[in-house]
Length: 564
Image 1 (cartoon, rainbow, N blue to C red):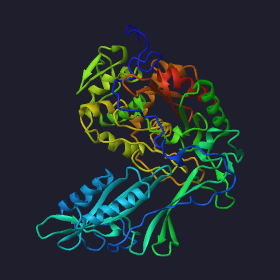
Image 2 (tube, rainbow, N blue to C red):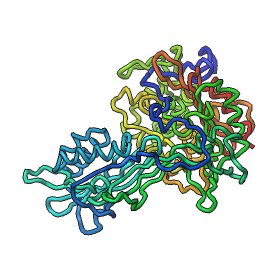
Image 3 (tube, rainbow, N blue to C red):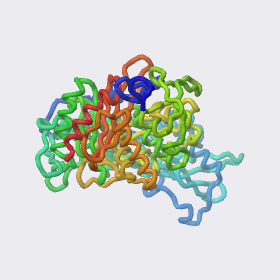
Image 4 (spheres, rainbow, N blue to C red):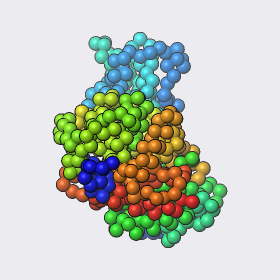
């Protein structure tokens, strides 16, 4: 295509990649001020629990059976609950999730006690931004109800503790529903005789092996020290159930940290030593000391073949970064549009210089492609064309689609701590427009985007794992075959004719998508590139970048050249 000036999309000048939608710094370490999250000196001997183990001391309240959980509405004859009871439960869970304990407690029949317990539980266990989702609701007599819920509790610096519980509700004389306050409403094992305690430890140095059984060391692969905790001194811990009076440990509810072979204590990984070496060499060669992360996946299994960070011993951006994915997200947006039949590759979707939806969106250097096809919009990464298609998807549709087909929104059990992506329902039309091309409140990292790439190219979501034998916890439906064929063609054309020509010339089946995500209105961008070649999917982000192809492109090319 000619006649539209220098490079389109996310090429060296990136006329379409950055969008002017500045919403904060996405690449920063989210726990930068948490001492236990910072790199520590290597230790060979295991340390005991931190001197002051965090305890949650809760008193009073009633008792709820430890076996409580999601309820089958017909399990014991209970019928559907009053919709108002469910709405009350959802408001309670929403207040708790938002940290508004007083507001949540006002929805119970014991506000003062509820506020105290909720605050003590959440703060004492160092839980940040819990995600609480209401499930089945059923009637319990004429004036009672029970609403099951799932709790995802991110324990600061360690990982996510997931459990299921039930809220009991009662209808008062005036007809208003309240949560009947009981300790078991917070967790089934929280009782008058047992409480929870968070214990933090530092891991001992691990003996680890790669997928071929060869030894993996921090000296040979420094990036894996942060990913796997090879050098020791990495945070790990547990949530324990303890006796309120004696302090004796009754059970362990959750463990955090690398999981080892129960036989010989060896950490058996899925890492490919040659690809890992290529990834770390590429980072050192091209990142230039900037913050960066990369993940390479086996598309047929979801196994992590390589994970690299820059700096190698720094924050694990590859697995735990929280970035706006920029235009690489157009892979998923396009999958949703194609699946719905809203567009086809040859559909005309104009690419204007500007488009206003609450704010003015534009393409860098105010470039345009008059009369463009959707194929041209994709391979040259035109933001305004995607903004124009916002009415083709409902407000919640992208959130639902991402979880249904790409597994984003579920908790992934990778074997090590990971942030598994976030696709919030947009708050307004402006945010919705921005989210279609990877900005707004979307959050991802190389692990998530390598998985998105693998799913788009194969049609099947396979939850990533890096510890051999790790049982995946997330699943998703198959993408329709026709959608996959069109996605692969678009990603292939992006390499041969579009913004990812940095990969042109690589032999084999190669497809890609570039992205440049704005961090602040005036500061540098984050450069992204996602790609696949011969069964391997790779995603890379480089901070302080000009473009995806120019900064992340050389890193990804070196890694894909090592795919044999």
